[in-house]
Length: 244
Length: 180
Image (cartoon, rainbow over all chains, first blue to last red):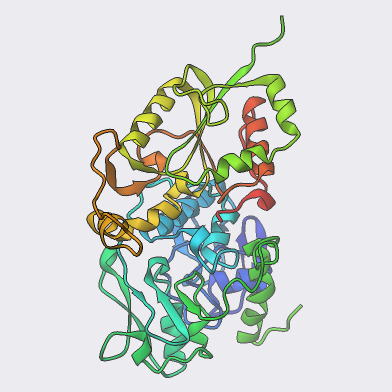
């Protein structure tokens, strides 16, 4: 089986696999937010940046190949990911104490994993619209990190409820209805798109604070442990590999 | 003569004093602390101005002109400045007002709000002027260390404080790292 090295470890891969898929299948966590094994890679958050033969690349989109020397666990790469995470925090309004997703938030858990204690940069405090028009789902754009997981999930469900509009700092999450309101789309609370958000931007109403502090998803397990447990089997399934 | 005590100052800007309450949650370890440290300016001592100190711990965001003044005085007086809690680190709950126009906030609070009698925006010259946004303290002065949490637990504060007192670079273990 062809292989590459990741932090000195031999990682086998199947032709067509990305670095992320091969690493995940081998049980190596590479931080990520916009990647999910069930959806086509988006390559936007850059949290999965790794050094491949001296170049920085996104592991979720970069194809695995022979003779690749990949570095993921260096202090340099960790620091790059830390700064990217801090940028995500300051570009939105991520006020964890007031967020329903706190404790189960992938952005927050990534911050913990990377040793982030502050935002480093000046905060943007952008003004973004909250959409409470849907009876079952709340859309709080303050927390959107533009990972497009909801866009891809909704597209795969054949509904195309969500889309990203605009560019750069003007990018915003829009919904597909004549009024522009979530309540006028055909989104249902049971849709995958309503549950895939890694932060607290799309929240299903009536489910908040069910898990008390101390029993939330990332209270005792790191995002690395959770991802390897929950996402790794999906990678194996996708490529027809046996789970070990 | 014993070793000179280290001097610690603490203050609260735009916050709820929760971080100070958590500071008291170090419980009986306070007795260990007072053996080696002396409190300078702090709500616990009611000293109003800071003299030279080793560590200053700041809770709360920067929401008005007095907060800026106090923070700058503290920065000048201390060797190491510690930003503690969500409000000091990213504006926290007070920063929820940043999505609104300041004039609208004042109008809602003092003119049109439910239960307001004798509606008027306070204009006493002794009142500090509000900034148009609540800012984290690192946007105003240089900060040396951050303790996240709303509030951080007593154990978290103790871990960082003892590291600093003993000259170690503070590193928070996973169980003590929370942003909420």
